[in-house]
Image (cartoon, rainbow, N blue to C red; front, side, top):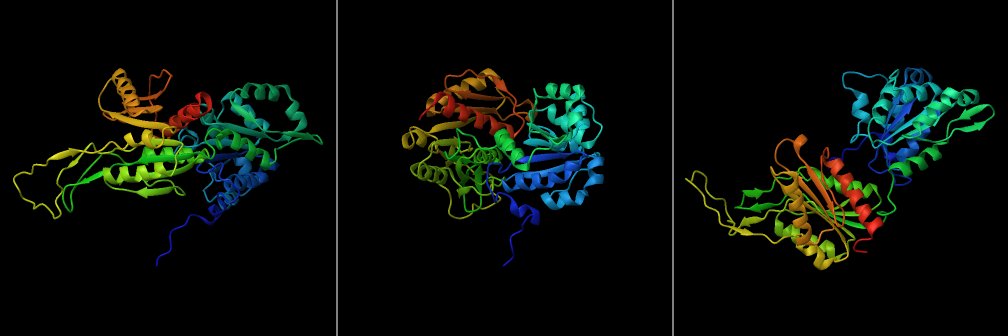
Length: 415
């Protein structure tokens, strides 16, 4: 029997000490300080709590510590120079990195961050990160006199509006870089588990359904399952206990999440009801369930070459209709797809669905036209919401997480 493919040996430590950073992508920016050797310990500690870490080194840091050590530590190739791949955008743009950590951050790096100067690969990555919503943590290391310099203090004061500073420890004439454990605590606070979601039982129903015409042909809904998988991953990262009912999508669900594989709307409904009876506090109905199925599917293959084929379709039961009956107190998130409608019409369709199925939150998408023009409306009971544009499944997942947290934490819906 062939052995299952595994990642780089360095990544075997992932999640061995905790899962608070599970699925989080962290960019570790290393500047030219003697304290740079401690960045290896930081990378390994973040990985042990589930993070996937990529290191970016300035030229000074690369002279002090061989870049191969960082490849060994993380299993990812370190970035030591910027090329036509635009590594600074690839790594630090929102939706790709979840957290950027500058460790150690020298006085020079802090100054470039404050002035927006891209003098090193580290500074350029930080410039991109500061222009997005990616959390940034800076851990300074320098001589105490440099730390006391009015210009450095001014730069730090300016950056505090956007950057979380951890340390330094002032002792023996040095401003010593923060211990790796302090960085871990800050990382967990920035992007780790959610107090509202930790331990909550969440059910994600995602993917398309396929309704059989004959032994080899089916009618399939248009859905890759990527958004539902992204929601499952986001809630799992936040500490929820996630299970999935998943149709025949082409996007694999996240590793480590229990998945029931289904094919038809009937199978999806039966699996969903079984999961609901087992108990769920959060239910996300992100599936593209077929509204109609062939009334009399053939046991054998319909012969090819016929002049035409007429199918009689029957409506399928609404899977979402089971939620309130079985789990009346669950926080329910429903998805509504429209095509080529104006934002006002999209919002009205979302509100109508909210009332029809008793959802607490509705994500209404316009799936027609180009992706850049697709408006999305996120509606929550008792809250006004307009059209927004979410850049792909990860942003939709984060919007769902925020709405669920608000429902559970702020308003206490369905508790």
